[in-house]
Each structure stands twice: as structure tokens, then as C-alpha cells.
Image 1 (cartoon, rainbow, N blue to C red):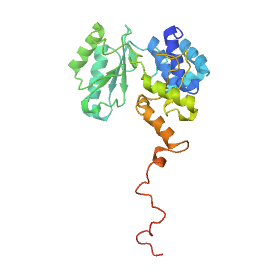
Image 2 (tube, one colour; image 1 turned 90 degrees about the horizontal axis):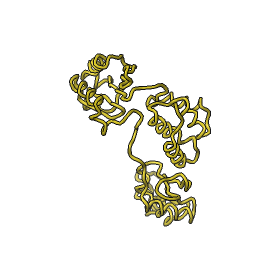
Image 3 (tube, helix red, strand yellow; image 1 turned 180 degrees about the vertical axis):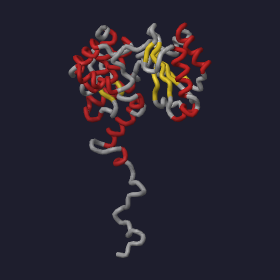
Image 4 (tube, helix red, strand yellow; image 1 turned 120 degrees about the vertical axis):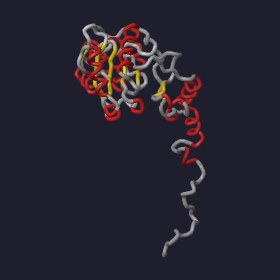
Length: 265
């Protein structure tokens, strides 16, 4: 068991820089930690706790609450067979029974070679292709018994390595921010810290990839309207919104408007 590797420690610090408080980065940091070992080891939980200034018990409590985190070893491939309503009606329980027979383990167990952990899950949002399953959160629909057998063989031989990474790898795309949004946000903060676009935060120079002082969005959509939002605030003036600064809306009555229709007075 190990603590965070140097590369994952750097990633964890970058994540901490996206939030006003270190503890706010706890869940994405746990995903980084789980990607490292395939599960959250006691040592890595302790390391994350030190970074976000929480106790190991608090970090463990968060990790054990969410079922995407594992505080015990799991297989290289986590096979999650759905048995919710749509899948149940289309053979979900039969598929689960076949998976147990094919892998030689009951749901909730791991094969002796450590390759597969099988679990029964609720809806995984692929109802139109029921019965369905997920392998390390990559989805497969309309799965027959023969399809499952081929899937297991393809995973064992590595033929699906490009599509299905080892367990714990939630996303293989790293966040990047366009240079224009970064420059605009930096100018806004220098002019008036209150005009930094919503959804952007400036992070320390020593923790961000791509250049010193590069801001990171709180959500991928945050970058899209950042520049226009900042300019709207500057044009409208402090304390006003785009709606307040614009023309009177049709629903707003002017001062010389007559009485409401049907008013008896």
C-alpha cells in the first residue's frame, strides 16, 4: 500500500487550487487516489486527509458513503450488471446469473485471479439498450449471454484496452482552459476582484499546468460565457445585472400605465 505518487500528488494539489477551501476538493481527489491503486488504501486515505486538513475518519466516512469508491481491493475489471426495471423485464437477472456462472463467483465477489469483480447494480441509465452492464463505468447494452462471454474474453486478452482502462480510471481527459478566458479573468481581477467571471477562480502559480496564474473553471461549461459575462458586468456597472441594465421588460408596467383590466377603483 502506498501514498499518492508524485504525479498524483501534483494532480491533487491542482484540484485543491480550484476551490476556496482544500476540503472542497475531497471527492475529485479521491477519484485520483482510486485511479492509482484501483481502490482507496488506508495509506492513501491518510495522505488525502493530511492534504485537505481532515481526519482519516472523515475522509473514510465520505469514501464509504459513495458506491463509486472502494475501501477494499477489487478486480482489475469491475463488472456491474443492472437489474433495475427495464433490465429486469429484458433479462437482467438471467444475464447476472450467466455472469456468475461464467466468472465462477457470486455477485459481490472477485475472481481468484483478481481480474474481475462482479456486482449487481441499480439503473445505469442505458435503459433503451436493456439488458445492460458497465465495466469500469464504460457501458455495454443489449448484452446477450454470448455477448458477455466475448466481452470477458476480450478483456482478458487486452483487446479492449483502449476502451476500458483499469479500474479507478474515471476520466482520461485532463482539464484545459483557453488562453483568452485566462487573460480576461486575470485582467478583471486586477481591475476589480468582484468582477471575476462566475465559475472561474485564480489559483496559485505553482500548482497549475499551462502557465502561471491560469484560472480553472468550476464546470466545463463555465468557460463558454466567461468573457461575455465579465464584460456585461463592466458595462452595466457594479451592483447591476444584465437584466437590470437592459430595457424594461414587457411584463413591467410604467409609472403612467392605466389601472389593471377589471380594476373597479
